[in-house]
Amino acid sequence: MLGGIAQGVTDITGFLAGEDCLATLRALQALGVRIERPEDQHVIVHGVGLHGLRAAAKPLDMGNAGTAMRLSMGLLAPRVSTQR
Image 1: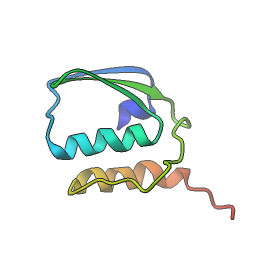
Image 2: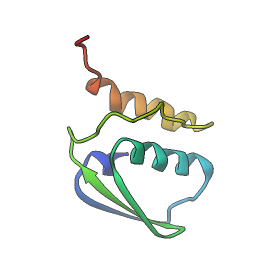
Image 3: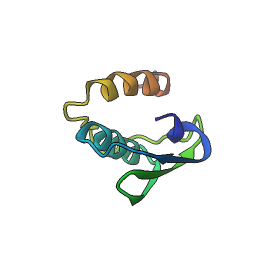
């Protein structure tokens, strides 16, 4: 998640390709973060910067990834528009 809002590229090795982690990757992709997976345990995250996330086209589905859901709320809460 931090790699998604970082400026530049984050290279992750030893990635656990479990359903919770994969749900987190899919959510970040839905928010406009480009993610590459050259191997199962290798992920390359192209960060969009602190203000670069975009609104998802549909609701984010975190599956049973409770930690991802809680951390995402903290990540996205400051970005919610208060204008209606």
